[in-house]
Amino acid sequence: MNTTSTGNKNFSIEPDRSRLLAELWYHQLDQRYISNKAIHALAQTHQLAEIDVEGVATFYHFFHRQPAGKHTIYLNNSIISELRGFERIKEAFERETGAKAGTVDQTGTFGFFITPCIGLSDQEPAALIDFYPFTHLNALKVKEIIHHLRQGRKPEEICDTVQDNIRYKPIDERTLFFAPYTRGKAIGNIDALKPEGVIEQLRISQLAGRGGAFYPTWQKWEACRKQTASPKFIVCNADEGEPGTFKDRVLLSNQPGSLLEGMIIAGYTVGATYGIIYLRGEYRWLVKSLEEEIAQFHEHGLLGKDVSGIKGFDFDIRLEIGAGAYVCGEETALLESMEGKRGEPRTKWFYPIERGYLQLPTVVNNVETFCAVARLIEVGSFEYLKRGIPGSPGTKLISVSGDCKLPGLYEIEWGMTVAELLELCGADDPYFIQVSGPSGECISIKEKYRRISMLDLLAQKDIRCGGSFMIFNRHRDIVSILMNFSHFFKHESCGVCTPCRAGNFIIQRKLERLQNGLADMNDLTEMKNWGTIMKATSRCGLGKTASNAILQSIDKFHDYFAARYSVTEDGANKKFDLESAVADYEHYKP
Image (cartoon, rainbow, N blue to C red; front, side, top):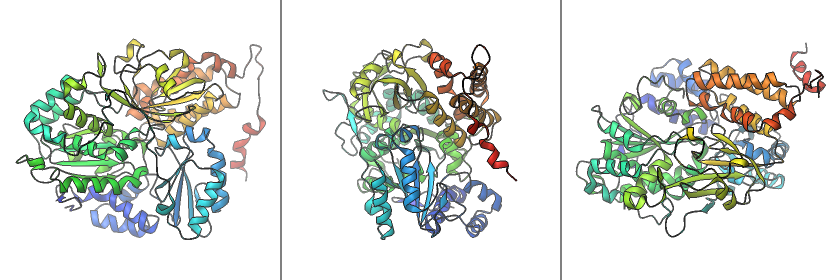
């Protein structure tokens, strides 16, 4: 049985395989890759076939089967980085390290790799070196960084301090998330409320999950509370992998106590004993501060036995570190990953509150939701309802990046219009706006008077926002933006179901035709058809939402796309790119 612990309490309920991810991390960090010897040893330890361990190791981006260099560099290639000079920074790293992207230099000193969003869209271009953050990169800074590393300096000694960039919060002390924080204040209210009282506070406040689905929190917790199986688990989904989104990063850095209190309140309410924070691998640099906060909670009697003096309420929390897989943001894929398996979404015969982690009742919420719970229980539902609008009370955190003067985190009251948010961030001639990341909704500046709320999407009046606004001005090429999104989804698909695996590939090829001036109306029609198929038949949320931006942009920016068609009315091609047409030839030369 596993005896790994964080704080004072062992998680002995967990089987050995649940530590496989952590053990793979050990070998990756210690040897800079996962060797055949390590695969064999882990297979022996867990009584698995070597191919099973191999399958897990090769599923995650940050596990390498070949040496990844004494120093491993991951440069972010998300759309905001691309617009901020990604290509120049990539060339600078290649020049200074001697390693082409995706390779290790001849001396084995530097491994240089490209990775999707690392949660630093407000400070691009950015990279991780040995999982320490380096932000606002330029060619000179890259040269200095590599020089220091060659001289023997450690990345943790020269990395940047990541700024929270909290740009706006409500006035008149109406802020919730960033109000003054006192450790244990929210937990101090739960013994008087009792579990039923906590559920009632959540119900009255209409608090909904903040991961994008907006499922009522009280309903999820109440359903888990009624489950008779034990033990139960509270899982925090801190695998914030949606490009352009970094709100959870700021909360983990600025308000870790609120997160822990929200998880403890959940544990008390549903009768759980164990809490696990699944932290994305890109945020490894936050592990030390999170573990220190957990230790402080133990010292103050807020974790461990008889939490906060409540007799019989024992609760503890540990960290689980992901290894780079966007699909693990889907809750069942996350649970599979925690169990030491490939992070592939489960077939949903059961909800996690019925059979979640280790097939036991499990509440899964994201960082913002748990922080919101802590603040709600601290101030009470009556005070909470003073904020926002009817049907959407409270406040919401939004990550803002792109073409604006003040990228960063905004705590807004529900009901703010898109125009108001654009004014607050100093948007620069906004034209195309991607809400809630590439899997969310794209809107044009014509829709700037829509409110941001939790109300029904079908009304097409208000707009739901899971957590981010990426702003693009009129000088940005929409097809290039969509190409970046499409490449991301093709790369991140787990490949299990055909609609997602094939659909993302085909859509990307159609976008390439459009970008090269070779597309016609049939290509747009086929993209829309494939997008519709993916939405209807994909196994998980990644496939169902991957085509959102493409489907919506074709409808909302019809004139733009019409101008990109290659075939005129007389059947002649507007453009024929010979170089692009024969590009694949190089791969087939004898």
